[in-house]
Length: 454
Image 1 (cartoon, rainbow, N blue to C red):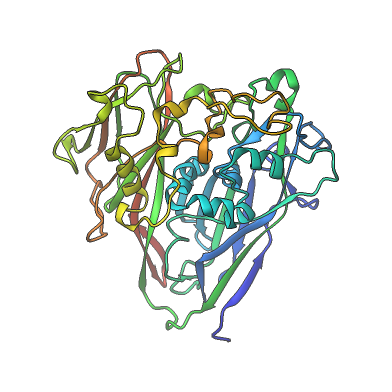
Image 2: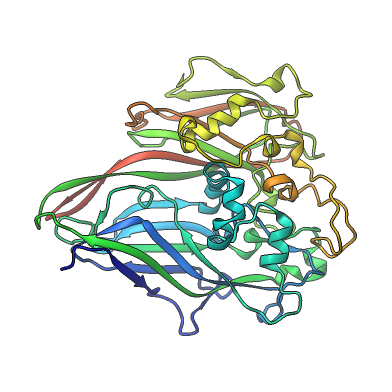
């Protein structure tokens, strides 16, 4: 066997003969089988490759035009199409990592780990990300009556297992026994939306996205370990949770059951904006009241087993004493970065004053030459689509890091994690809370199979 890298080209095991995949057609799961072999899979080399088309009618014959207002979240592009990422052992079907609400996780992850220049350069080609909303509408969504040619993509799939630096042993004798990778597509009405909020009257609620010619590209190297060797493999994992809040004293509490937690982060969205054609379901806006007034977070308390942790004090934000302050409190911004990557390790990000203003919940006026993004007179976008703002809009992410020194994490195996948020949510407007837990897991390989220790 060659000791050099081997390039693998893996086609889906469950795609129809047409090669076209869409949520609308009732085929929302794409399954790839990386077969059992005596090689190490390089997780950071994995790319989900294919083409995407957008249609504005049921039969998939009408493409969006510059005269309509169909859009998607330009900050995360293709990642908005992935609702769940599931990684299993092919041999035993044991779940190694399962990230629900993957697109919502990426809504916080992408702005925290990539720069504006990344979005305007390589990510615009590989992930169809364009922090400038007008560029996304004209360059990716619209076909303007021309011959339809699908947009191509080649996505890296950020997750704990694939972001690691170690090769993943695919052997059935001392390895995972091959991998089963499932990509669950998100509903059309949580990916696409009408910027003008008139989807039902303009028939844009019939729109859908369609993938074609998809495959998985990756690299593997020879596994030089002796056959049957019992070994361990450490990797980070992401666990996802969902709840809702609707009071001035919001309490979030979960039993994580994880023994090495590194950080926890969460983002928010008014519940009525989820799976609605007239709203951007990927927006990460500040918490707001029904009249669009800001519902400032004034104080945050994190707990472990009911006791304050890791801070032994209340986090009082600037808005507690200065409600007129429009910028996110620096403590708040740093906490979100710490939970995802570690503040001191962050070399690039879109998180900046442009995307950290509480008044960003309402889109600002703008003027363009010629047609606007919606084909109407220049003006301002609706308040509910605030990614029309600078650099793609807000990145309102609440989070806390636990261990950036030993990198071994804190145990929540028997203790619950809690967050108490004092805020100005005085109207009846429930907000969905998407919470993600970053923790370390261990895979134990042996002749008897694999075991996941979390």
